[in-house]
Each structure stands twice: as C-alpha cells, then as structure tokens.
Image (cartoon, rainbow, N blue to C red; front, side, top):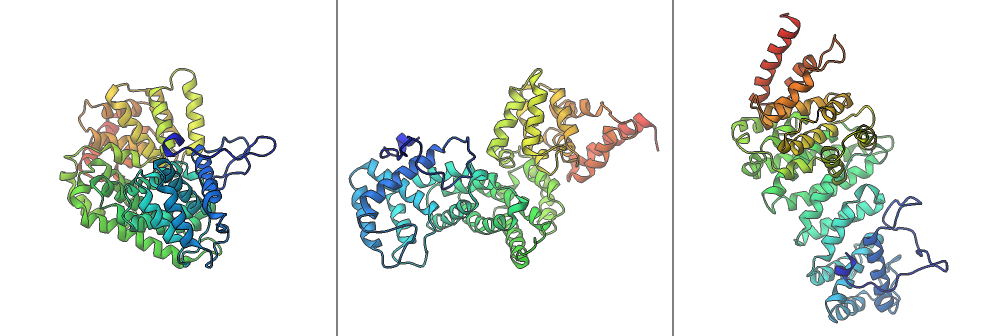
Length: 449
C-alpha cells in the first residue's frame, strides 16, 4: 500500500483531470485501470526530480557522463535523512527510475552508485516489495521493462540484498514461453539463471523451487529451435546453462531436493525426455523421496499466481449451472481448447491436492479436466496422483481415478486403455503397481488378449 511506502506528492494531471502519461511499465489496454504501485512510484520519482535532479540539470532520459551525479547522490542522502517517509520516498522513486530508464552502466558515478545508495537506504525493503508487486503482473509488463527488472534483480542478488529471493521465485512462477518473443524470453532466462544460482542457497525451499524451475526450462529449451534471424549459439548456450544449473543444484542440495517428495517425481514424469537432467540419479533415491509429502510450495510453484487463484475458485466455489461456463472460460484463458502442454497437468495435480482434504469427489469437474487435455498430460496427472500422492486403494485419489475410468466415451478406446498406456510414462514403483492393476481391470473389461 502506498501509505506504507510514504506519502506521494500531488498526483500529476492533465487539464481535463486525467492521468498525465500512459504507463511506462505495462502493456495497458484502453480500459485497464492504472497500476497503483506504478502510479505511486512515478509520483515519488517526480518528487525526486523536482527536489534534486532538475536543480542539477540531470535528465534520466539521457544520463550524460558529465552530469553531477555525485552531487545528486549527496542530495538524495540528505533528503532521506529528513525522516523515515522521506527515506521510503527516495527508495521508491529510485526503483522506478532504474526500471523506466536505460541507464549507462559504464558511467561513473551513475547506475551502480544510485543502486548502492538504494541499498544503503532500503531499511524497509521498499525495493524488493516493489519488484515483487511488479513481478506478479509479469505477463503484462513491457518486454523492455521485464529485461530491466531482471538486470536490476541480478545486481541486487550480487549485492546480497535481503529478500531478493522472493522476487526471483515469483518471476520463476510467472515466466512462460511466448513464441512471438522467444529471443526476449531467452535473454531473460540467461539473467534468471545467474540470479537463481545465488538465491538457491538461501534455504531448503529456495533450492527445491529453483531445481523444479530449472528442470522445466531445461526441458523447454531442449525443444526450442532458433527463429529466423535469431542467434542459434545463444540458444545452445542457454540449454547448457539451464542443464548445468539443474545438475549443480541436485549435486549440492540433494538432501533438500529429496524432501520435495512426489513433486520431484512429477517433474521427472513431465521432463523425462531431457537427457541433460539427472533423472537416473534421482530415481535411485525413490524410496527416500516417497517418505516425504509434496510440499505445498512446490505444487504452487508449477502454477502462475493467477492460475492458482482461479483453479482454487473452480475447486472451492464454482458450483451449479455456472460451473460449466466458468470452466470453458478458464480453459480458453490459460490453455486453449483443446488444452495442450504440460501446464494443464500441473493445474490438475494442484486441484486434486486442494480438493482431497474435503473428500468431495467433484465428478463433473474432474470429467471436464480429463476431456480437456488432448495430449494426455491431464490424464497423466490423475494417474500420478493415484500412484504417488496417496497410493492406498481407499484413498481419495484412487477413488477419483476409479470414477473417471468407469466412464467411456468411445467403446474402441476406453479411458482405462488410455490410462494403461499413459501410466508407463510415470517413473517409480507406485506407477508400476498401478499399471498392474489397470492391466488386470482392462483384461476383465475386454477379456484377455
């Protein structure tokens, strides 16, 4: 809230009373409401310009080497010394300046001197809180703002900035592949690999989440091809960096990763085709892995924040006649129709774990999810949950699966037959036992072959 970030100066307006400028950070559509954090940050930066930069004739649009940056830094320091609110105002304004303007990092004093000042003043974690708010809206950030954000984050990680890992983990969740901007995504990933190296050491949870993220992107990058005019060598280098990151995290934080439980096996089931990942070594520890439940943070990390919130609504709130319409909208928004990609499997697995404590089988919801996945990733999630999340015959996941398999749409291709072939893609002894049961049921259904 802006009240916690310091009182902003009066809001700049046009003669008609409307905001004076469009967003400098977001891809705002005509009817979108302005981002409140961006507005507050912009107001504080305008205050810094009026109080310090304009008097010294410093233009952030063209940061000239001969500008009096040393004087500006001294002025900002004196300004921040006037009280806590002034200190917060300086921090918020500087964060906005670093995100909106392309500052020459070779100028001294310049970019890194302002960053050092921000580090010294940021006792209230204004920088990380602001970047965290922007990272939650990653998909509507302008591409250039995304790149500036991760460059700033890398510099903050190098400076051992407190709480920077929270921003890195948030971006990991929000970063998705957009085919039209593949080269830009690869550039962002290069920086995120460096940030993740530094943040994974913070605690056990960071190591777990970073490994899952690195494995996912190593798998995605292995199937990417250079687009016309793009640098193929950069893509090869990115594949190497991601594979080395995942392998290095496994070697250094093996005990912590084992405690990720079935979440680690779910990653192995989805990204098994990437030979550069250490799945063979992971499966050696299957017994130890399955002694731990899947941490909720790991299951959350497979989904964006928006997808998680809307999936929770489908599970907990969407009932009656509106449930079908809401599901169709949900599917179109996140996956397309029919759904494709591994994302729907992550979504289904999360939904199952959210519904299991209440014991409500929700047959219509699960039936819609099964039918929605054209590639089989959705069905794979149901099978994985039955095999590894709660393999007992009377468990919620097994009863859910039995209810789904009892339904058949096409007599020549029953769900049970499809499940029997899909379960072979799941690693682990639990999946092997489930395959035996499915084969037995299939033979009873259609007779021995």
